[in-house]
Length: 256
Image (cartoon, rainbow, N blue to C red):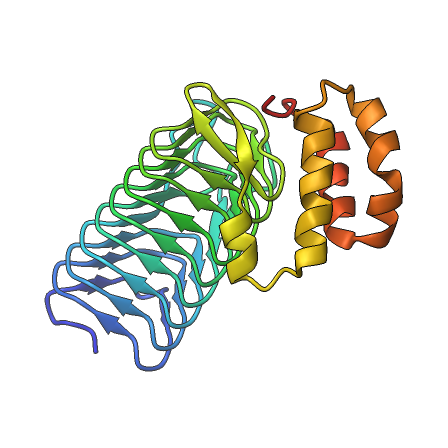
C-alpha cells in the first residue's frame, strides 16, 4: 500500500506487497523489493536497489549523495539485500567513482537509530550496528559483526567476520575475525567466544582460534613468527586459516 501523501517517482520500481507511509519520498531510479515496509518521513534516492522484506523506519535517509568532496554527481549506486531493519534516522550513502561505484549492504542486518554508513562501504550479512555507530568511507565489515553503540570506524578499515566492538570504541586499524575490540583507540580484548558458541562453532575450533589469537596478540611475536607457530593449526582448521589470512592482508595494519 502506498499512502496518498507519499511521493513515488515514475521511474521507481515497486515490488509486490510493499508499504510506503505518508510524506515518504521515493526518488528516481529506485527499486524496492517485495514485502518491504517503509514508514513515514523516509527519503530514498537512487540509483538504489533495495531487496525483499526490509523494514525502514521514519526519518531514515537511504541512497543520498555521499559527503566526499571528490563526488561530482556521478551515477553511483547503493545495493541493499533482504530482511534488513533500518531504524530511525539512519543514513546510508551511495558510492563514488574512486572505488567500485557502489555502497553494498548484505541481508539480515540491524542498523539501530542514528547509524551512519558512508560511501563505498561493504557491509556483510547478519551485522548489528547499535545506536550512533558510524563507519567512514570504504570500510569493509564482515558477516556476523556487532558494532557497539557510538563505535566510530576510520575510513578504509576492515572488520573481520564475527568481530565485536564495545560501545564508544574508536577503530583506527583493522579488527581481525573473531576478535573483541574496545577503547579509544581500540585494542584487542580477547575473542568473541560467546558469539562463536551461539553460532555453533565446535569446541575444537574455538580452541584453535584461541591459540592463534594468543600467538598474534599475547606472545609478542612478529606476524612472520606467528604464521610459523600456527601453520599446522591453519592447515587443519579453516577458521584459523581465515584468521591468519586476514592478518596477512595488507591494509591499515591490525589493532595490537
